[in-house]
Image 1: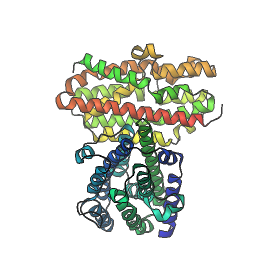
Image 2: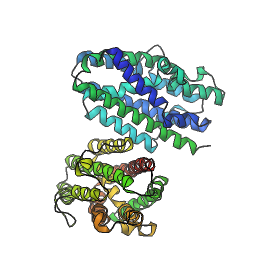
Image 3: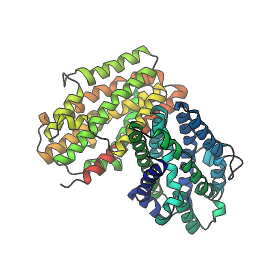
Length: 235
Length: 236
């Protein structure tokens, strides 16, 4: 497959995920401050865990050009990009202020069981499986943020959930720096690895990459389903 | 904690687990052969995967007495014990025959998403975390089959599911050899590792080991909820 073919394949998986019963339910639950806090605290664990995962993928990958791309990706996430001078965790901490969370509330967040399970599972894929599988698993979930691809079904996760916070909590997009950034940043991140799929996604690797993407989307659905279960228990 | 304190602590966690909404749902699904087949196939993946996990725990553990105990445990599961001369996978294949599954359908079973998530999570726990934590995580799932602990709540997982299969599909114990074996074998397995937790999961290692046990029960609950959801999609 060429880059266009891979784009279509990953795009279709992302659309299936965002239309899945798990995501429909997640987006149907009314947002309160306590529920928003839960989402953001779990997101901070998810985001920090991805730094481990991308590092595992880079460590397993023998191709310097791919390592360079991962480093560029991670530099933007952890050090500096157009959205933050302090990495994206800073964006989450800033977003937390709008809903009454301190920096420590976010940094000391405890995972709910479904977050623990899915983060361990992603860790296993990225550390122990073929680097193409790990890369596919990591890159795939960023497609779930792509408003270009998902506009006709409500937008990517950051836009769709961000808009719910704006509508239901009376805050503005200026209060949501993390999601405002990810609406833009993940478009670039999605495109970043298309040349890798075109070059390395041949013969038996094609099935391996696609299977890992599919598994990663299943984990994403279960992560969000766990949030939905936990949100429903909160006022 | 002393061995008795470990027993009480883990036992209470397992009693909470067996009364959880996920397990109540798992046991509420009315059974027929196609639904039972889903459980047998997922259970075969679960059981085979545990062989990897126990090996990870053993590999990460520097204490020879613990490695010996794990080997003893695994010998019974993989090679021979009172219930099978061919290991416990053989029991699952025989049980699968009762619900219309060929051995190849069991050997080549595909995991449900929840099964895959839980198995990967256990892989991570046992491969990457401290051996005291993974030992607690692995051993506690066997407590879920302990009728001594769970008798007043309807019995352990295997006994309770066996009763459902007999009540709802008319099976005899002979036709469900895996459930029969695990309703008994895991009582012995429950006791095997308590002395080592008392001896080695001490000080700063104690709380993480308890947390790992709690996480492992949560994985088990998610795995079984996934099976129940898949079963519910199959008509009665």
